[in-house]
Every structure is written in C-alpha cells, then in structure tokens.
Image (cartoon, rainbow, N blue to C red; front, side, top):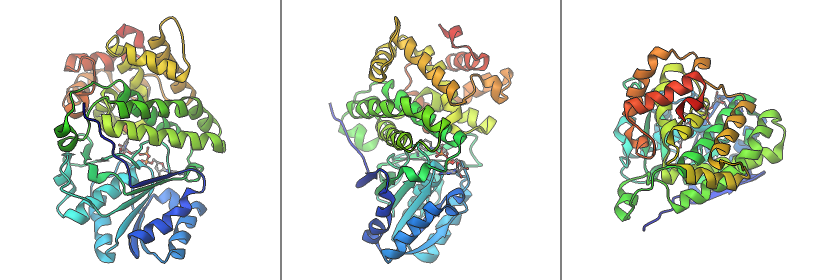
Length: 400
Ligand SMILES: NC(=O)c1ccc[n+]([C@@H]2O[C@H](COP(=O)([O-])OP(=O)(O)OC[C@H]3O[C@@H](n4cnc5c(N)ncnc54)[C@H](O)[C@@H]3O)[C@@H](O)[C@H]2O)c1
Ligand SMILES: [Fe+2]
C-alpha cells in the first residue's frame, strides 16, 4: 500500500508564532501582497504582522476587499493588485475564505487564465506564487489543505479546486489571531473542523497506488488521515464548547486551533463525505455558514451510515473517552450534545428549509460525486433525501 504526506514547507503553531511572518516573507522576496479579512485589518494583532514585515524590510501592498464564501470576481480584483506590485509572496490573513481566495489568486497570477481553469482535481499545472497562510479562525484547515472553495455565479453550487500546489508554502497558526472571533464564528468554524476529522475517519477505504496519490488528491481513509483525525478530535471535543462559552480562554483557543489544523491535514489527504456533499446545495439555498450546515448534518449522515461505520465510530468513541452499551451511538449522541451546547440548530426546519425542497436538494447533492465516493451510505437520490428528511424533522431516530 502507498501512503502520502503533504504539508507546508514549515508549519509554525502556538502563541507568539505570528512574529515569524515578517522573517518568512523576507526569505521569499522583498515585496508581499497581503490579502486580509476586513474584520482583522483594523485589529491591533494585524498591526503586529505589518510591523514584522516592515522590520524585515518587506514592502507590502494590501487587498482587503474580501467577502465570505469567496465570490469569484474577487480573484480577478486581487490578481490585478498583484500585477501592479509584482510580489514574490502572498500573505493571507483571515479565515478560510481569505486563504482560499489567496490560493485562487496564486494559481491565476502564476499560471494565467481564470479560476474556472483550475476547478476540479489536479488542474493547477505547477507550483504557485508562495503563500504564507495566517488563519484567524480555527476551523477550515485551509492553512494545510490542498483545497480552495469558491462561489461562481455560473454554477448552482460552490466549486472546489484541489491540487498539491495549493498547499500553502508556510503556515503560521497563532491562536492570538482567533481571540477576537465572535462566538458564532468560533462555533461554526470549530464544528467544521470536527466534521473534517469525523468524515475523514469514516471515509471509504480505496485501493491506493502511486498513480492515485500523484494524479488524484483525495485518496480516502488512510493511516495518515486516521492519525491526524484522532489527534484533532482529542483537542476539539473537550475544548470547542469552552471557547464558544468563553472566548478569553486562551488555553482552549490554542487547543482548538491545533485541532482544526490537524483535522485539515486529515481531510486534506482523505477527503470529506456526505455532510459536505449535502451542504453544497443546502448552503447555496439557505446562505447559512458552511460550518453550521455540515455540523447540523453530521449526526444524520453518521446514523444513516450505520452499521458500515460502526467500527470507526467505536474507535473514535474510545479515542475521546465516550462509552456506553452501544459506543457508536454514544459517539453520535455526544456530537448531538456538542452541537446543542455550541448553538447549532437541530433541524433543517430551524434554518428555514421547506420540506418540499428536499428532493431537489438531494438531486443536486447526488452530483457531488467527488465527495460522495467517500461516503459509505446510500448515496442515491432516494438515500440522500431520506437523510435530509430526517434532518428536516430534527430526529435521527427515524433513520434507525
Ligand atoms: N480550503 C479548505 O480546505 C476549506 C475547508 C473547509 C471550508 N472551506 C471554506 O472556508 C470558508 C469558511 O471559512 P471560515 O469558517 O474560516 O470563515 P470565513 O473566512 O468565511 O469568515 C467568517 C466571518 O468571520 C469573520 N472573521 C474571521 N476571522 C475573524 C476574527 N479573528 N475576528 C473577528 N471576525 C473574524 C470574517 O470577517 C467573516 O465575516 C467557506 O467558504 C468554506 O467553503 C475551505
Ligand atoms: Fe468544511
């Protein structure tokens, strides 16, 4: 069996790490383009990054016109700023939306064309302008993944590009960047990371040879993704409720950030499954945050996928210290309690979904085969509609 590991050239984690940004940028050249979340650009913590770049002698231009979910026209706007300044590096300071935008900008600035030229797996022809990722949310794992997700008005659903060339060159994960995250952003980003780890751990095992790891990106459940999924959940499960309830709990903030990055490494190899596939059309229809959607769906997909995923759920239950007569069910119940505690709604009714729309949503989700090949449940339109209907009712027991 072949395995693979993909990661930034250097990943620097922990309180104080952001002092590394200036010196790392200086290693890459004398001019950097900063792509910055507007919610961050006014915070003192951002001033520490720009001061570090100044001290390292790195000139910097700034693009702050970022919006969540990455509308595709932003790529051309930011690429134009890059053309004016000819930077040798990109520095993304923000949540998943900002880091994903920077990845798409890197692809376009380096290889020309438009973002749509790079949709799908392995369409980026070679290395891109080096990217330093500085996440300000603890969730998506984009700082370590080979993935960027954007919104294209020509497509009903969000679209992904995945390529090893989109793994950032350097990632600087300083939990101080997340200290100002409001509770809802903290909850939604954090539960997204929980989903990444659980979906990767319960993904399909596929035969993998050198061709799959070179010509493909997501390879299904594997020993590397398993190890990081376990590590991620050990950090996330006890600490996510703490950071939602008390954003000043810096010890828990650091743990959640480590967990989110580990979950990113996990799914960056395995890929994600049902909850993410269903969230594509659901997110487009409801405009709800990505993490809220995947988190809401997770218990329903796991319940529907039993007994195929029982062994993995039992292993995860043991890993996070959950037990019961039926450990797989106890693990799902623990996730349900976690969702409740961090304020994720229980049912699709609660986020304004009409029951009559479920069939159409299932039909759209059934087309997301890139993710559904990782799902061990019934991924037919009927099967997906059944999961959505249970989620609509807010009752996972109807699936048992
Ligand atoms: N590339 C990947 O591997 C990957 C994985 C999962 C999700 N995603 C994508 O990432 C996006 C979601 O990213 P996200 O959850 O990090 O949220 P986000 O980047 O969309 O940000 C959400 C909101 O939080 C604000 N914000 C961010 N950091 C803040 C801080 N420190 N203080 C105050 N406000 C802050 C932003 O301004 C924004 O309004 C989606 O587009 C999703 O599809 C990408
Ligand atoms: Fe996600």
